[in-house]
Amino acid sequence: MSRKISRSFINGRTGAGTAGQGLKVEWDSTNDGELHWKDVDESSLEVVPPAFQGTNYGFAAGGWNGSSFSDTIDKFAFSSNTTATDHGNLTVGRRGRSGHNNETHGFAAGGNSPDDGVIDKFSFSSGSGSSDHGDMSVGRHSHAGSSSLTDGYCAGGEISSDSNVIDKFSFTSNTTATDWGNLTVTRRGVAGSSSSDYGFNAGGYSGGNKNEIDKHSFSSGSGATDHGDLSSSRRFSSGNSSSTHGFTTGGTGISTIDKYAFASNTTSSGHGNLSGTRNEGSQASPSSTTDGYSCGGNGPINNIDKFSFASNTTATDHGDLSESRMAGAGSQY
Image (cartoon, rainbow, N blue to C red; front, side, top):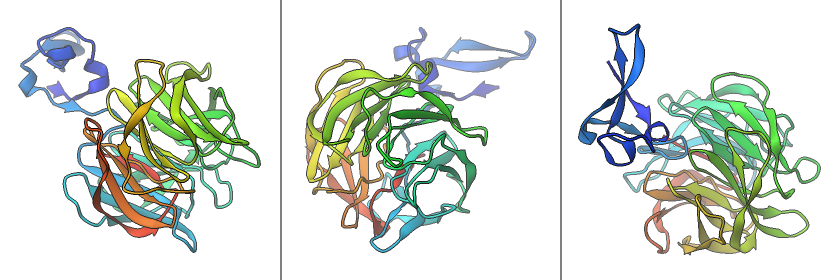
């Protein structure tokens, strides 16, 4: 029988479809049960988005609601402009967490409540709330999150001081995260984005706002390398990801959306603006295959902004969170 496979596994393969997307994996019952590639009509191939993009829903988990740490997990549809609905709760309320996901679950790591290294895991299909999924190597907040198909990565952040640590944790096993090298610059308030092969960490703060974009490999724990700069230094921004570009949205007193290519090390360019500045609080930032979303922010506010990956225009309103908050963790399904 046929198996659906991720876009990450079919890109670059040669076959009937564009960029190898005319390939599928089938079970070969006549040859010792081996998996093999088979050319097929591209129209019949089900392409599953990579971990850093979704097709149905965005999720915003935790944050600060103005009076307390929130444990709310919100869910909203990419296809309709409506108020988000409750999708259960985190194990404890926190702010400054990083968001991650695989095809079935969302993960919210670390946070400030005070500094906490707990990694929460929640199901996309069930609103029953989250469960404990191990710990970061060191509890911290305001770090960047990125995701491969199998693992989550937490970069930088603040413990008692600013950190340069990159943590890696498995989506399938409940264990303590392992060290995966270091950022090129120690900082907190970092914005994370993901390609199929790398995690990207943009901006931040440590003695002043930063404009560096770091890149670290998902396959090697040798640490990050320089990948260009943002158009301006900023902190407490959020990160979105298309299949080819990273986006750094907002930041302290900033409404600008920056765009940079995953494939080239160059200074990022402006890509429109959010509907307003997000000030000192980062916001949850899910990504669909076509658009980026910015959920909440300092105030706190409940706005969900939506901007197109393909068009350089000001973001539009896409409904509201169930409660106003800032510094939540974003994921997508």
